[in-house]
Image (tube, rainbow, N blue to C red; front, side, top):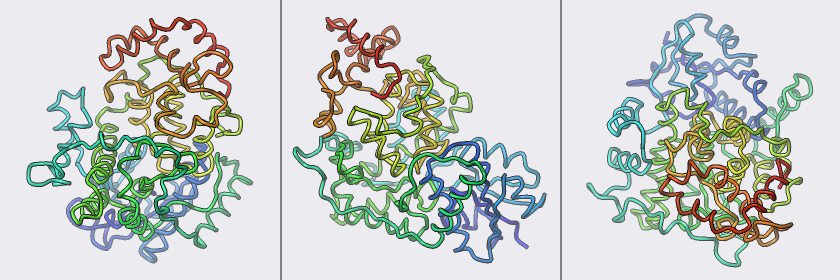
Length: 501
């Protein structure tokens, strides 16, 4: 009999069971374990817990008699119930904790990772060749595209340029409440979802497992079929308008033209190569402009792949990096996703989106939630954990580099060249969020002082010595000397403290 193969809950696509080089044996029995300890250890968003469990149970139903699906307190208990100490294969897990677990178990053979474009060894060789320090995402992205022939015409980038960011940073159309693009794919719930919701209710009622956020109708794919439908709808009906406004924010249109495919990719329901190939095919068929296609390809073959590789390359001690010495705890209103307690319209709108759906796109994550945490000096490890728990597409490998490196600049610039934070002027330019707000983006003192504007200058003042030597921040730091009201700005920020802005 073939050696059983263990599928984790983020390894749910057919490519994780494909036999051949680096894969399980043909027709191998499948083991899947639903471990309650995962939800007991962390207070996850309820919609995220629902999505993961729904996806696992749907996959088990598809596999039928081939799978042994076990509900247990821990993974070890689940393995005892299925294979004991017998031989088992598993693809390289996506977290260091899971890798430590499978590596310590007797009889387990760890197969190469799937669901990503570049093997770890190839990335290590590339990174070591660049000195292992300033591993620029742009350099990596071009290397991946060349190596995989993605959006290339021979040796040249398709469309004549590697980077179309210049065309993809437009503010939202003036006066528009929405982009007016076709709605994204939304799945229909099944009896599996009803069963999952019943179990989550019971866990909360009887087992003391707690969640945060709301669990409305499931918004994201839980099956391969649903994920493919979401991909096809995006490429055929939404990709065209994606590029120009990918950095813009509209209060009444939280999804804009975004693909909403990150959770499907991170559950393993989609393979990254099929996503970028579909987008490239649309451009070659004349159905989508190159700037939108390149922007989408960059998100997957560039940024997603880059973050996955850095998670493993930087090592476990990266988790504890705190170059700015930020140690403030996350306040209760933020931990509870209490959007109603927040006066600042931009932050309240974004926090409500997280509360209600477990998702926002990358600009609210980086330039609102992350920027606020950075300006307030919140502990980067706690911020990382919050993003991991509260987003449907959040996993350890996703959030550790994204938050420690990019969002909180806690690695001191190893991943990015500057802290990503701004005053209210940027939020005003790239969104419609400032109009109905009680604060004014141009005010840094007084009752109407924008928390992001005052917070920005207070952040620069607090870290002036460090940031003045950064070429991308030097001019901003010099701007402190032109503020005649800096002392009042600092007093304004001090009075606010950690209360909701």
